[in-house]
Length: 570
Image (tube, rainbow, N blue to C red):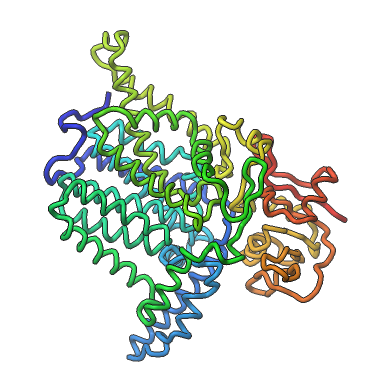
């Protein structure tokens, strides 16, 4: 077994830093992850709201250019006016309620790579590199705290072969950034409490600030860090709190220019996005859960069931194997504490509960750590078997355990590519079983990738009227990018989410930039209907076409379950 038993209970001693083998392992995981992300990036469509994130990033970059020019000219008064900040930093505030850091990272990524990559790929470089850092970080942290290279390899492999994490590593959303920053902050704090240098505490604060500056949910990391300091280093609670709080607040302030000029407005936006979200009609998304439609949030067991069904069974085995036992109890408790805070927060009536596990994605790196510990523990248990103990050396055992646990999981990633967000394990009968049991098998709208759009362009003629339904924003963005024919007439009627308001007619309007626009007329009769299989968002026309039972002109399915159907209506 690959193991370093020189450390008691897997804990680092003194100011020890990860050794050369651990750093080498982390570097290998980073390179492999980055290569896999870039090699598969073009297979993924643009996920829900990312088009709006992209336009928001461009506005932020425009403001930054104005700010730099103002500094050079000695006049930044107009640049820092509330009106100018409102236009650049609070654009579509209801639809984009999250703090700006994720859009800043993706925007800078686009700025740096726009001349050598296409716009979407350039915009995704930031999130892809963040995923690679998360993979390497999980591997290095687990190896260090467990004193086992095998545990580190298991943790890194878990991140790479968890379908939901692999897919999110390609999407310039908030969720992967939040998961990485939260995990990084927690891991650095854990290392500091077990004797690592003060720079780990400072880095914990910086990454906490990044988490809080990415999404309101990042605040949930604060009680975890505070409680852990109280339990492990109570004598340094005040000093540690000051270091973490000051560095986190600095990041939060520096990355949000609205706070520079109008702190009250900036904080109102921030806390309003967290506490008032359930009162905004545009946020009341419907979700389908075991055949029942729910508005905004499902029942209390929703996140627990979804967690169990999106993790490959062999990784579930490794996770549960990593929980018992005394050797790793400290890090196990830390991982469970982080995950428990997230699940407990979802029990609050104001918390959203939809989109599968997207809202609890920060728990998954901690599950990967547990799976890494489980990998080492399974190997240790097997070593005690008489048939295996008879051999003087068992390096093959570690390789065999890694293969048994992660080859099936890797096969699931490959089998569902590029629709890993729709992966569902055998606990409910796979994707087809989930569809039959009334679960949503797709929800983030990443279905319109380049291959699908090329297929559609091959049989939908120029000038055709298309009703994309729930995929309206993504279709408009595809036209802007040149991935969908600009001649398509894209129009849809959408039920009003505001009581006593008539249904809306929305069209893709604009020449250079195509964007959803409300018009005061009925939509044109469509030639083609794009039916995205998120039934909770279906309109009467979707249900009528489905009941009629006509064969679709085009279909994308996964394991026999439809993700997208295109119907020719006339």
